[in-house]
Length: 221
View 1 (cartoon, rainbow, N blue to C red):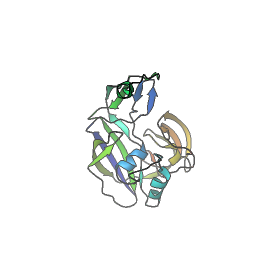
View 2 (cartoon, rainbow, N blue to C red; view 1 turned 135 degrees about the vertical axis):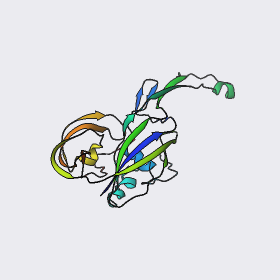
View 3 (cartoon, helix red, strand yellow; view 1 turned 90 degrees about the vertical axis):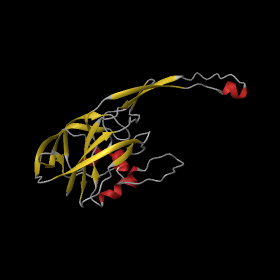
View 4 (cartoon, rainbow, N blue to C red; view 1 turned 60 degrees about the vertical axis):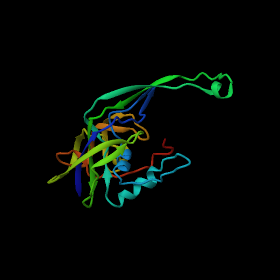
């Protein structure tokens, strides 16, 4: 098994709506493994989808046959930038009619700032060529990718603590999860500071048995 450590450096502000707090649309300081898998070009989806429904299972599950998996990314160091956006209802100017709908006229977006850095891990049975640049988030922001291969890792079995964020669906079938903290992110909330039992890579403290699983996702949004 080839295990690569990826360091991602944001070149532009990165935005995705993790939480909506009134008029504030906030971006979490973690990157979901579904988004990273698409961004790295490991999974493809159709350019045009009239229904605007994600097809995570159809796109990602075939990677299990190739022994490819990408973990979520955690911050090495990061900062936020906040922008205020405004809009107006201009129907009265076009049709000379008065709008009776009370629409908000402004809101704020909290984005991850440029030069924020994140790390994740990529597992692959075969050696793999990774892009130097990817696009990520709602604005398709530019991200630099640096990677190195982890070598001489020993597999152990027993109880261990994983500080790296994990997708619980991808690890719970082959590992016993004892305790964890939750990171609320759609479409599947992540977990971190996980105490679990199973096979793991010594040094990385990442589970050995991990793959894309979707049994519990009914209506992803």
